[in-house]
Amino acid sequence: MMESSRYLKITGGTPLHGSIRIQGSKNAALPVVASGLLLGRGETLTCTNVPQLRDTETMAALLRALGMTVTFENGSVTVSRTGDLSCEMPAAQVQKMRASSIVLGPLLAQQGRAVMPMPGGCTIGARPIDLHLKGLAKMGAQIELHHGAVYATAEKLRGCRIYLDFPSVGATENLVMAAALAEGETIIENAAREPEITNLVQALQAMGADVVFKKDNQGIIQVNGKPELASGSVRVVPDRIAACTYLLGAVITGGEVTVTDVMPQHFDSLLAKLEEAEVGYLRQEDRVTVYPSRERMKSLSVKTMPYPGFPTDVQPQLMAALCLAHGTSVVKESIFESRFQHVPELRKMGAEIDIQGNTAVIRGVETLNGSDVQATDLRAGAALALAGLAAEGETRVHGLKHILRGYEDFDKALNNLGANVSIEEGEGII
Ligand code: UD1
Image 1 (cartoon, rainbow, N blue to C red):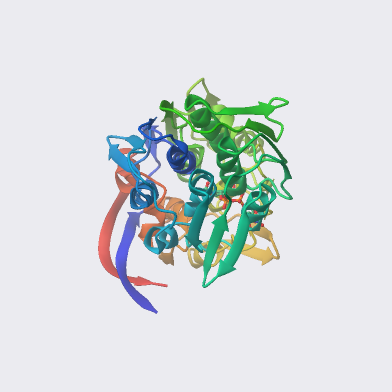
Image 2 (image 1 turned 90 degrees about the horizontal axis):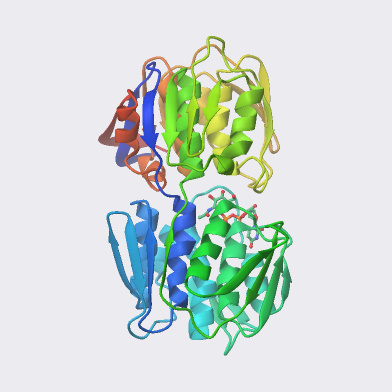
């Protein structure tokens, strides 16, 4: 099937060189901005270091559609509650972005009722929201599903003990926000421990919420609900996934890249793997440099895990690098069931990858060849772009819109590092 779309044209073979300031985290910015829904009337939340992306703009539009006043300029978002709010999340925004589902909890807590059409977003698995809904039900919400929408009602949410079967990032975000306005104490056990959760907790604390990590963030969050939250400000943490992507760009092209304005402790899981693969790097307080090595990187065995394990959002980009490693690597995806959609595309470029269930076996090859490939989701697209940077000849990554959901000025950033890429208009492939 053909579709008219923009694609990323890459002339490969140039090692990346230079330094790049890493954007604020998309996945942290979304819940941080959404938490503005918890404000009392007349109060404002100011969020800085917000990346200018389609997804952050969708979140701003969603909050506006609900009746919040939102400004978004030069990386700063202000969210104010001025008038009355609507309980109905508009399908237009929700279907554009799966993460819209994190608005359900705070909207319900604030309004006593919330209606959400089932969300869209990246196609990397079934991605149910049962844990979000079960948690809200445990807090006293009545949840009904009909006509493709979730209807949630609760005069007043009540604090309670919630044990998550899996440390879901989105469910933790939804529930911690709902608990901030619930009556009494909520304990969330087996909560996600991602840096994005810590950033959300910082935002809630800045607005006067009583939220703490118990036992030094070992997955237990304690919340004492307040009737309403007040003005506050918060800085969005650096994007660890973007940092990892650009560092792997240096690895795959044999270049030297410094990522700055980062928190390296957020991606030690990647740095440990680079060390194992004998890739040289320097880790400083707020920057990391990957050095070129004379030898190809060594093969690796990697399993994706909840934080602080190896992130599923870096699995495709690391796999792209492993296609050119010395030896055979094994990558096990344990978070999402269909997250190997980059594999057939990498094969088109000459990669040798076998898949058995949720495990990919990658036999390193000496070269990849430029090709027409299709990005099916955000990180798969980033992986294909990295492969294109290292490949011989020209690569066209179709489905560019997926990549632009997560990377600010992706083409300019790569060109500033010496790459040869451009965004082109044209027929794409699916
Ligand atoms: C977030 C990130 C995404 C990342 C993922 C895992 C955002 C906007 N997105 O997604 O980039 O890849 O964390 O680090 O922050 N699950 C259920 N029931 C639920 C919720 C989740 O079974 O109610 C399952 C999912 O299907 C998946 C796993 O739990 O298999 C992890 O999902 P979750 O941590 O919730 O990811 P998201 O919040 O959707």
